[in-house]
Amino acid sequence: MDSPTDHLSRARELLAEHPVVDGHNDLPWALREQVRYDLDRLDLAGDQSGRLHTDIPRLRAGGVGAQFWSVYVRSGLAGDEAVSATLEQIDGVAQLLERYPTELVRALTADDMEKARAEGRIASLMGAEGGHSINSSLATLRALHALGVRYMTLTHNDNVPWADSATDEPGVGGLSPFGHEVVREMNRVGMLVDLSHVAATTMRDALSTSRAPVIFSHSSARAVCDHPRNVPDDVLALLPGNGGVAMATFVPKFILPEAVSWTAEADENMRAHGLHALDITPEAMRIHAEFEARRPRPVATVATVAGHLDHMREVAGIDHIGIGGDFDGTAFTPAGLDDVAGYPNLVAELLRRGWSDSDLAKLTWQNAVRALRDAEDVARDLQSTRGPSNATREQLDATREQLDA
Image 1 (cartoon, rainbow, N blue to C red):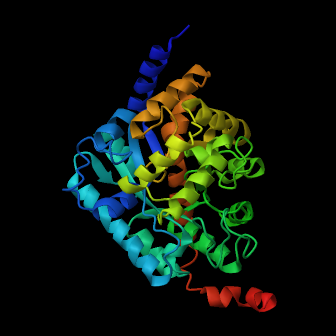
Image 2: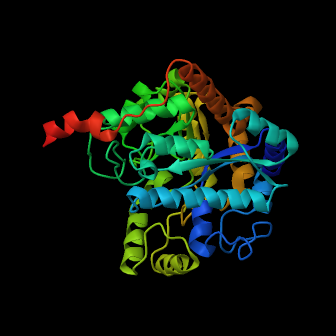
């Protein structure tokens, strides 16, 4: 029988050949909050484990070959303020790539990802987290794509005027007519539609409209942990028909039922101290640590995440799952997946559970690359038949809003 050491050694060998494509990492926001993108003050070439989940040595140790850097801005920002902050986040990623060119390289296509892997560099892509980043403007959506953004999460924690979030009260019942047009235009330009954070109604509406694969950049299985941020089984079952990929997240409150109520209390404690519930600056983490000393935290583990992946593989199939850790976007992480160096521990656990080498190659690398390539193919086809959409929300949603008035 193979030992845990054997599994871990084999996991590292597999990741050397088929590295992780991680769907979501919030390092740009952490850099914005902590040092306003000043990499002299927070040099990722060295160990930053006291302040971040992510640095280059730990990305290497974790076997990460491609990373979607989230250019997230809080949904409390609105209008042009949200657009400007998103542009600043995109510029922050550009500074990151300029600072570490031997380790990180800009990637815009599936071919770019494969080229980076061959060169031994980490392919760096971007995802915008929340439709508030485009201020209901399809021209702004196209501008983000031109700047290198390769997915957009339709909502964050709050609704946008044209799409419902998983963690807000229903607004338009999924996607509004303009929301469907956003999905169609994303298909046309080749930007992946990301359905993490959105309501299940929005997931189903997007899947009914999208001609390209969708992704869930950081969501797990609702059947395993009943949290609205996770993907219901009926939606997972639609992914084979769409070609999409659900990328399991590591956030304890989304994967461990016991952690849901504890995190709600911890978030309330943060607000009582005048801090945002998602704040992970050193001061915020000190407040969290004091709370945890009084109220011990339920701890998720590598096995917790593996349980979600087992279920997602069973329902969606091995060709439609991936990994999206949400590092540097969460205050807490599972034991054994403490930071970006932990991916070999997850692969070792899946090996222990009987996952094959080919299963793991699809999970870590092949599925995500294939989804982006398929989206590129759809975009080429659509661009040959129609031009950019200049529709506005006011035009497309007017009838619905009149009926609701």
